[in-house]
Length: 379
Ligand code: SF4
Ligand code: SF4
Image 1 (tube, rainbow, N blue to C red):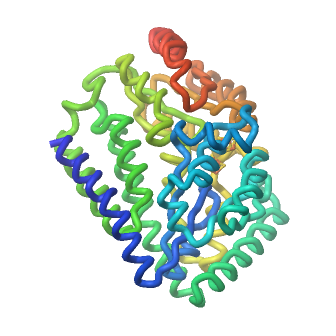
Image 2 (tube, rainbow, N blue to C red):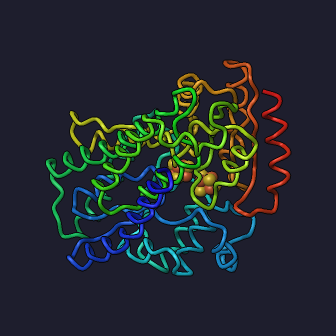
């Protein structure tokens, strides 16, 4: 049954490229987004398709390194490599690319990316708790809304924004419901299964298809459908993975943890629980979007209080035995923040974290395995 469900997900994923082509042929625009800070609702409100962009595989990194320095975060190199080698169908389909001034490497990469496709960069403030930051962010989102209106020829009014917020809230609620299944003990879905489902659903042009698929999977999981295929079913340490985004191709740590007989019960990252929010449907739409998106708890913010609160809540809710904090090589913000994360987890839960710094290659797999095994034995 698990195989059947995962095959049907692959079929939906493959069909999505046809859906996208058809939507483009019908005159719809597509907008590619690199980061969780950019409100996709603004694209949806203009009838455009919001697309995440590829950046989780090692293959295009060599081509990226012809332009970018080697000692750069693999996520940035992979994103750039996919774009310049024309191997990301979503980048190819997009009429406009949107990035944010998050970390140094990414914002400088966007300058080069703009040579390949129009890239709009939102000027993201560096903190979340001042009036100045909020007023800058609101004006950035207004500027973005104007740009989307120009690209699509659609005037975005309050009603269209409210509809878009409702739709995207439904999608995020379905994601959250799926992830929350693993508060159960034993868990109902493996970390790898959750990662694959959320990753592929993210690319779907038809949001309703993704929502119904996630609801269907959640119903099946509650019946125990996936349990025989969970690597460490019925036992195994419960691990929360925190830190940088992960996806298919950048999931080696998740696989190793499962091979070592433990389970990733939840993801405190942009591929997982950082997307488990809802935008306020009552307030004026642009205010709600500005407030919610600026609150994204990423290490590029200083301070980044939200991540500590979120992680603490997740450790309790998912009854975690341990925390693995993943940093991509050369990601200074997550790397530096790892010290405070470890401090918080030790103080509040009396367990140390395992901080791993790696890239997308397989060269350190065995070294990682040894460290993960030792950590699992210790907790
Ligand atoms: S980790 Fe931070 S910079 Fe990277 S995608 Fe998420 S929010 Fe954006
Ligand atoms: S993982 Fe770190 S360095 Fe890489 S894109 Fe995200 S914030 Fe930037």
